[in-house]
Image (tube, rainbow, N blue to C red):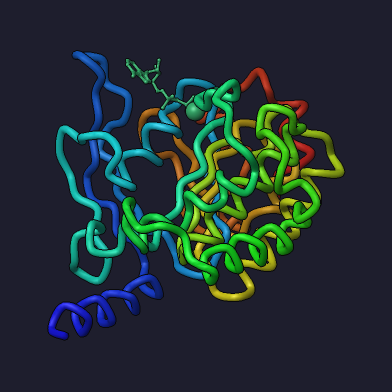
Length: 260
Ligand code: ADP
Ligand code: MG
């Protein structure tokens, strides 16, 4: 009973900002992130942008606690982020996933129910129901028996989002979900993520290029090893911040999308 009460009180924390304070990360002795402090606003879509190798994936993983930081902390309303770990879903970069592993769409989505239910509990009727609902939400219900290796990039992303929904995650982190997918799928996924945002979920998306930045995101984190800017798109997406992150050579391409 006591445990349940504690869990309940932690659940409300997902409505609070995630506070990142002075995070630094290095691999061997090479610094990947240097003294990053910012906060991630709940109920919004936050984009993380920056050039290749800027530390975007590293940042995502350190916020979730998948990699060890050299220093700094990640907290939510003064509590360690660990207390809401089960409410966070992580959709990793597609290139990091072994698509030859023989697993069906419905099994992949079912994996989302395990954080809540425990690994050794057999799926029950309501879990199967949850999987079905989640697949319907991403319009993949007709693909449940397919092997994930046979899906297009866009379909695969939708399955991973369904897995996050089956997890009942309130916070969803996605690493480059639009890489290698067609514009129709991209639009569908963006609309879906916006719908989830409107239902109160917090969405964080790593995005390596700048197209659609203004349409897709409410807030932006611009990184290049160091934090260049964070906050609403309207104040952070400027020529100056983009040039700081990407260098001046991109000027022509970039300037079209920029506010000032
Ligand atoms: P991004 O996602 O912005 O492209 P990453 O976070 O993947 O950047 O990488 C940031 C830097 O850290 C890069 O220089 C990359 O080569 C390096 N790096 C990333 N992962 C590792 C690793 N596991 N071991 C060593 N270096 C790594
Ligand atoms: Mg990356």
